[in-house]
Length: 194
Image 1 (cartoon, rainbow, N blue to C red):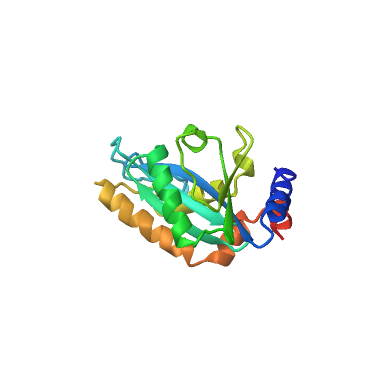
Image 2 (image 1 turned 90 degrees about the horizontal axis):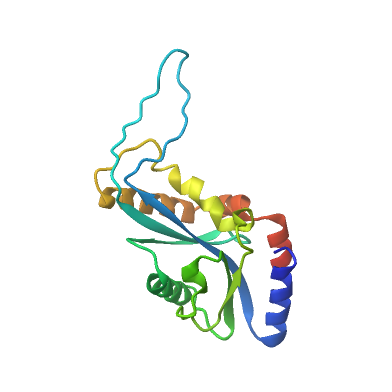
């Protein structure tokens, strides 16, 4: 990936010399009424108690991050498949005014709904796939521990309640680009897009 990203950017800049490029990463994370547990400090001899309410209902959190700026963009969806991803990509492209002169390279894993030939990618967006089974190369993977902090050791009665807490956490993270840059800005990524 350290070689693939700069090579792709150089090729794209040669093909579209008038365009500007931003490089984003995208990933998905399942959250639900099944609790996220975290360890906590308690006095010696005491047992920590966290409420649990095992229900097998889920939402999907889709996160975009631009590691060079720390800017983030989020979607919460009830299920995940290629038609939903297509809609999310279209919204993302519109929100960031993707065009012939304002292009985005989107780095993502090789999930089946990312690689299907049925997926329509917006004009001006270029997908770059990570090698198989390499989450350590994906800056967007670093988003999930941060979003999980808001829901850890808590029990939710409904998906609506979970969605509200998660949406609030995403808004908080959107307002902290320097922090997000520090978390997701891998040195090789920042060098490649400089």
